[in-house]
Image 1 (cartoon, protein in one colour):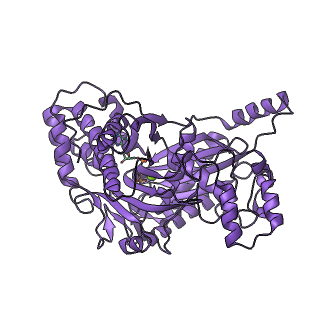
Image 2 (image 1 turned 90 degrees about the vertical axis):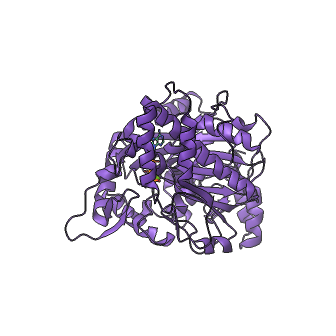
Image 3 (image 1 turned 90 degrees about the horizontal axis):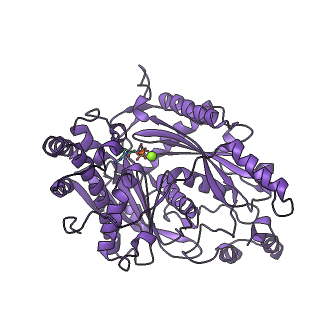
Length: 518
Ligand SMILES: Nc1ncnc2c1ncn2[C@@H]1O[C@H](COP(=O)(O)OP(=O)(O)OP(=O)(O)O)[C@@H](O)[C@H]1O
Ligand SMILES: [Mg+2]
């Protein structure tokens, strides 16, 4: 492992951090229309694809609305409503508890349903988005997996989230992929290639693991985050296409490693376990937040961070690491870092599993809490936040190192991080320094190969929905390999071999509006 003591604090590295700006929907349409009227010859009326991402997390429950301009294939953030999951109402007498968060918050189907309904409605109202007229699709996902026994059981949670969306008055047709082009709303139809390239399960050019079951319980979140990193990276012109390592540090950790197969990349690695729960345990012990279920989010980390810290804090990082297990997930595990896993299915699909745990399924959380208390007492709060940033960068870089050791990645890989526990404060600089020291890239090249994106999962929900509606464009591909052109032609060849395609189909495909933009 890399020794942080030897390294300076990542100063001099310039992280590429993406925060998609929030834009008012009316404004977006107005500006687009202005352009339309100014130059009728050059522009067509903008068409926006509007998607809500509803996420039930262990710490936060979010509804994030995005709009994708289908001509430019650019994504905008319309609104974000964030609530603490622990504020969900408690089970009523007689209600069955069907799941619980990492911090033991008990969940019932009705409580989830009401909470999701209210969060979604609030978000739509704030953004002035009409659920019937403007909204096209709702994607539901969850990081809450600890209370389930197998990856498949998480389906019950996704179902409860759907109930919440229905209770908010969302039509059920906005929650399942359209079967045919006729099911695609009229205003979008021109852009849909659904009758030409059917939805085949690939999202942004990557195929999920080739198993009937899931290899990790938060597989879907890993998939969405990976796709969102690709889309977010585009905002700064960063080519985040395959092969990639994608990691999402929520309270839990989820991620994916893809290879460079073409036209579709295969998932060759899955990453699962505990993420933000690590710093949460430290601040819980330090008395900054509730001792049992508080989070760094509530501790206002940014205020305490960034200040001068006297030396010696590096030792605390080493101490904290002793309480963690960052490793290839052992083949006999049914759970790692509280997340249900299926190593047998992973082996059959040739997917390498990497995990991060605090002891065994969180068993060392009390030890981390005690360490947090000690750091605050002996060195103060700024040191505690410095330790948190350095520690999370170490966790992330160790995962990259494990992927290198397993031969899964090489110098052609791009790395993307999302989630507050991975990208806030000074974590990006520290991570760049550590990855530079791993020797994965030529010295100094690391800043151009790693991207940090805020709320990638929600951006990914927009991407996945577009894939379901087949609303891609060859002009600005997300699929395919880094630096290479669109995979549409290859996909067509691939489909030609695998499906009953007529020459007429292929001709139409080449002359569709999306293809014309190439
Ligand atoms: N500055 C920070 N430093 C470290 N961790 C942070 C910081 N700010 C927030 N976090 C942690 O990030 C996590 C919250 O992120 P997020 O809202 O993405 O998680 P979540 O969606 O609730 O979790 P999951 O999806 O894994 O269930 C919490 O564990 C929180 O303590
Ligand atoms: Mg989450």
